[in-house]
Length: 459
Image 1 (cartoon, helix red, strand yellow):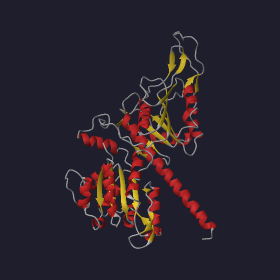
Image 2: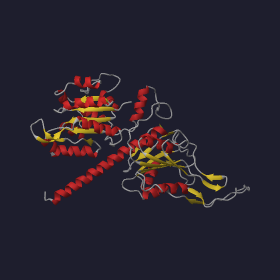
Image 3: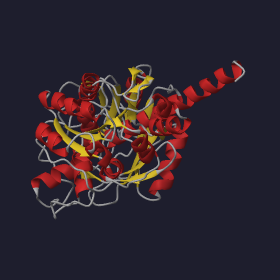
Image 4: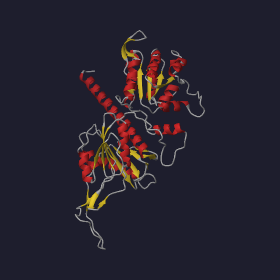
């Protein structure tokens, strides 16, 4: 299925360039849906965009042609990428401050896809502190700006304010879907792909999770990253025929490995003893004991971008394994157990600024309190917590229901999903949040550097 580009066109002379952009995108195979402001209609007619795109053009938030849906929500949900070109100072200001008073501004707030904005305006308008503050605010939220060019402007001035050329905008869009340009949504909805699939089939959601007839989308949000995942149980030998273990099937870790590979990552799967077939294209390291998993994980500590501790590692092991089978003698057996190495804590302790560490917490009570404590104590960025006593959310089942704890301890509860769907939801949610967090950090560092330069030259 071709990606859908939602193209917002606002009221500037550069609106005519948006027609050329639609033509370019259609030739490249994209589906293009145009949303226009009333100002844009003064420059280009909706009929022209409709003819070029072969799609309905949206102009009025109160025009509901289909009574089964709400237009501004439905069109926003269709978007795989939102592009506003040209974007006037008015549209940028409304988007930055959450104002929704026409079709385009309403759709922008309803959209959960990544957003690219191509400003076009007079040079003095573009450099005005209010406009620059609005642009900086949107950048911190993860909106990607296509910088305007310099040259003669329609108003007669010469300076920065010319909308980026359609060919360059089209190349930037290609970069997004080829995985060369990673964008975060300023308003992500990780469950949207599952809802789209459910809506497309027209069938009710079955017990045990959302529908999954269609394969998940393949946008490469993890392109260029090395993701190391631990999965399954460990086995701690008691004697030559017995061991201590747990009920983990490894399904969640294997689903994460498959989803991460599909999303563009180089994946290393450190697997305990399971009966699952590893995904194709994944490096598999097989281990049995917690100590072996610990050593394998540490061998990758300098090379990973993401580390996901999804394995159910034994917390204790026998102090010594017997060389012969322990015989039953009709009396109690006393075992001495010692703690196993703490893989997540060790990885978290040594992580570097560019590395992201994600842990799992299988709990039976006080789930949020225990998960938040674990995230802090292990120095993890994220914790995926679940109550293993809930139906469909414990070990050795096909589904899971989790709460995602973020770096600021905020909790996002996800519904019951198949583990394959949950894996993609988790990876996309974390990838978008991490991209947004890093963008905010870069913007903050740039602001501090700018303040430093201003102080240095006496301004």
